[in-house]
Length: 165
Ligand code: ADP
Image (tube, rainbow, N blue to C red; front, side):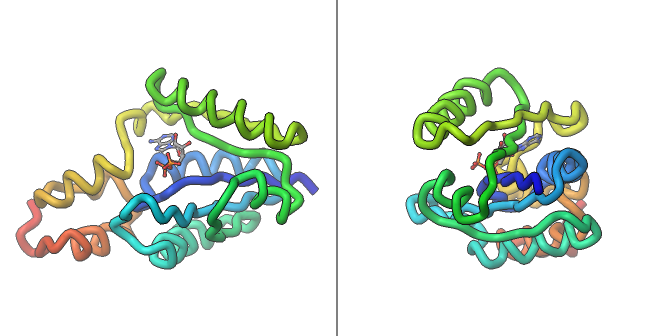
């Protein structure tokens, strides 16, 4: 059984994340989306809210499961008996950090490999922070996040969706 973990903050899940989830789920037997519970960041959504949104938007993909984790990614993989990490690459700016993380993870556990999927060109500009920023000022996020997520982002940002253009 080939199990992979796609870790991230997903604050909130975007169309770019969902594209990576759909594509990587085809490559493995089981894909665990790992939502990082990171105390040093102050996220817009709580970890439970992020997990629930991801569960909703992935409910029709049979081999995907969503879980939260804290601590080291390599320990989370060990618990799941998984050897593969999935990460998305949008641009060269992602590359340096991603390479450093994957090298570090391999030093911590040399049975682990990271598979990088290039972004879908449609979403190459897209990040959770862009979504939060646009929503905060009442901009249209309907092309950025799955439908079920749109109103929750506005609500969290204290924006009345009646006035959204
Ligand atoms: P993190 O805080 O770990 O960077 P994110 O939720 O921002 O978590 O992203 C998780 C993963 O998804 C990262 O590998 C990131 O590069 C990738 N990712 C984010 N947005 C996109 C996108 N638009 N296209 C492809 N990959 C993406």
